[in-house]
Amino acid sequence: MRLAYKAFEPGFVCRGVAFKPIGEKNVTEAANCVKNGWHCAEDPADCLRYYPNFKGSVYCIVGIGGDVDEDAVDSKISCTELTILRVLEPADYLLHILLYMARHPKKDCFAVKDGSGVARNGYVVVRGKNPRAKGRGGDLFAMAREENGEVEQVAVWRVGEDVPEGVYVDINGEEICDEAN
Image 1 (tube, helix red, strand yellow):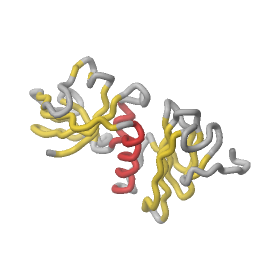
Image 2 (cartoon, rainbow, N blue to C red):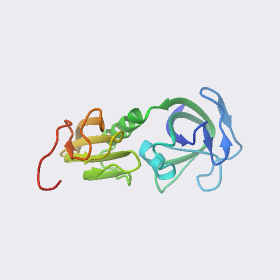
Image 3 (cartoon, helix red, strand yellow):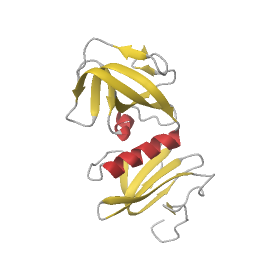
């Protein structure tokens, strides 16, 4: 079984279709990324393109099989067999994005900021030599420090619990006090 990522509305609903619960196989007749099939993505960050409501979506690891069609636009996949394996908590989902970045350091992603970012809709993912982020209480930061094109360190922080609100912090969770704030 091949693994991928899929986002849903609460209750495992996607485009009005209620998927079977965790562990049960969902089957459809045809798979074409443009027309039909069960859609998912190899890169977990690509789910944010289709389900950007971070606080209102459910992000999952899925097993796929049957007929599989892959998209040339991003890492979107269409398949005829899809099984929800695990729901990812928001911080775990961001860790999966960081892991994918570490495994594919040259791949660009629309959802990842370069160098500095401000959380929107509850999250921000930042990569770079000295990544930094800021946000409001409850927001999540996912950061990847890169050196020579390789991910050297990752961190996920929750604003208000792990790091202060409204100020830039570095990958170590320490407040950055400079004129760029």
